[in-house]
Length: 330
Image 1 (cartoon, rainbow, N blue to C red):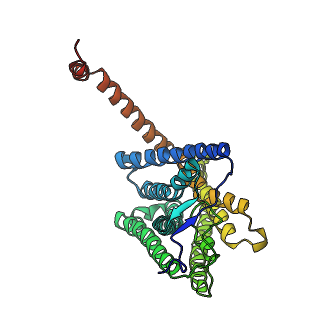
Image 2: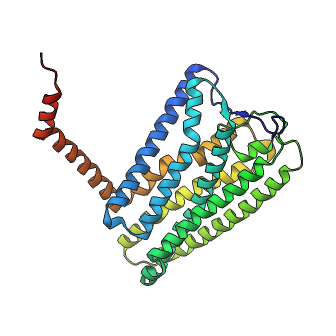
Image 3: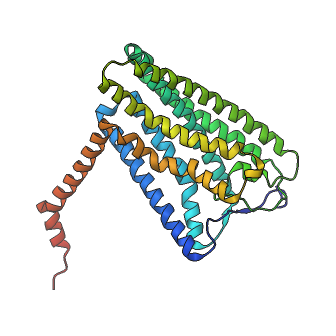
């Protein structure tokens, strides 16, 4: 493919122009990224190590943590590097990697959120049949279907975008490689194929969203019929965080892709992209653990065990003898 039909590199849009603001942007995104790594890492470790959390709900939460780590790792580190080194360039391979993996993680996460809504629906509306419906093999199959759907969608979008001839420059109006921004650089009607593919994907995600809303309507109707206040509180504590994150990520993503052209400005595009690609991976661990006592206890036990093991290791005679043995003698 010639350089004229596809650039060898792209230029990403930066958040700031001055070095001080770029450094501030780097520190802010670094804090968000580290918070996402820490929160999702703790959830992954707690669910994997605590046998009490080996249930369908926490199995899906483990997959959500993996997807969140993938989403934020695909976009944020490159943006931080560009801010730190005062550059805008991303290579052709970096562009392909971002487009593919971002489509994988975002699509798979939306399907997984729909599956998690179905899991809560079965747990609250059909509790006597929960063990039969949400068997281990069924949960693994549904999680694999979510991941597989993400990979299939990403392959179609990336391959179709690769085939587009671009002649409108190489500057993207976004801080990561986003397919709608790449379509603006196309110089032929071939981009209509990718637009059609995006419309089909949007309809599938809209169907998932409708299913999710219907599930939660049934859930809230069942919860309001629970006579005990403690039972209602426990049910709402597991459902409301999930619903809040679904609303945040889906509403901002739909508005970002379906907003009218006259509302498309660089600042608004940046803000929406941060809200649906950067904020949810960092906030998800906090929201899901804030009112989930089982998860909080598991994370706390994990942290105390790690701290106690570190203290025991540092205070052991073997550690001090090894340290004294390596100390130089004069």
